[in-house]
Length: 481
Ligand code: BYC
Image 1 (cartoon, rainbow, N blue to C red):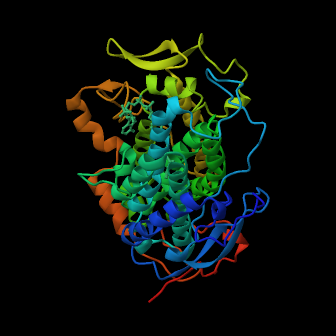
Image 2: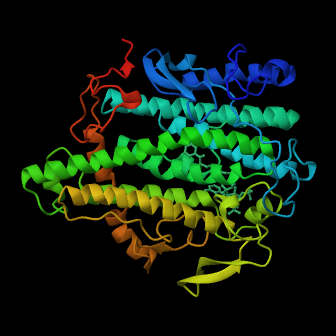
Image 3: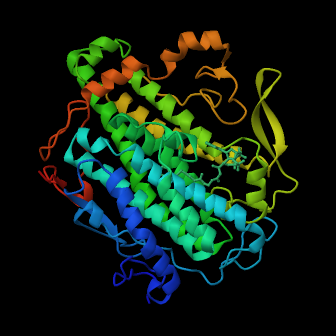
């Protein structure tokens, strides 16, 4: 079988020769009906019968891996796709550096590896659950289609992790695969594993911020797992990253279009001061200070996804060769880090201080720093949109200590500038920095559906180009009556 092309003859499209791997095929086929039940219960609400113009992976060749066509989402061909195997690949970091990459799970690391795969897997259905009501308030058919594209691909990413669990972890892998369908975002008894995946995504601005900030955590984590010495995990994550790029595009351009529309409306109405919130809101667009608050919220929630700044788990993952650094093989050092240090922000005597820590235990902080740098570039692109429109306002990422629930700053309150404040002081200023109930109500009031091809809600500008080069009035979703 040609690894580049996907086999569609089995019920589960794949490029891992499932047709000859009967046991795993059987396990996956056994899991499939439960997945479909989950999709029908927890996937996009109200649009399961609609025809959506979606891309489906047909190959893992970077030059042409997808085809576009109208599909009913429950009939989407969720497949198992791994990037091609490199026979020469080695473990590239940690204490096994230089050994041949593992094709089977190393017994001593089984529990650690399973935990990583399960946590990764758990986030995928969680995001679909968080976004399930958004179709009903889509600002256009273009945006609705992008939402559904992201959703079906997160579904495929769940399949990717379930394949690893069922193929490499035997019975406990099968149990974990079932549990991935049992937990629910925000559920009191069986919540999703990581904090940000239990938060609500109440409106489209949240969706765009989520796909910019939280999907970008996904990019960083998948990049680190793509370095893994366990080759099937590496190959799986490499192909997932191909799809992930579009999700971040949806977030970045989504926020850009909101900013553009707000600035245009302000200019047209002759409003120079972005802080004249009520006047801006009266135009039916989202004021820039509220955009900043939404950004503060989603960035800080996403920082929590990197775990504690100092973590023995992270050191163990790295030493074992299971999870590397962002773009590990491009870094010029010994890839063992046993004698290195890394500067970590910590609370020392009530002050935020940079402290030297062993580089191995500081790996979460390092990945988070790489993430912040990547986010900052995107924020600068947003600032260019505002600047170009001639509005005097800049968006800024808040300080790392702001609004944290995990790690060094979980027990303090800090302003976006990084000034530590008392709980009483925080209670007074909270609504200046994070969306208030009134802000949420205002945004919700703008969320009216627009379903005429080529038309957009008043609060968001049209995109520059269509998906798959389609014209502006293309009917991306044929909504079933
Ligand atoms: N919430 O040593 P610590 C994506 C737990 S997103 C709740 O500080 P560690 C996507 C932690 O599990 C990417 N619990 O951290 C995006 C541990 O528990 P145990 C998802 C948390 O382990 C959008 C304890 O606290 N992939 O793909 O070094 C849409 C102490 O942990 C949290 C991954 O995350 C939290 N935020 O690192 C769709 C990659 N943080 O073990 C998809 C795999 C920590 O003591 N996961 N805890 O019971 C990992 O690499 C690591 O598990 C983490 C945490 C980076 C998450």
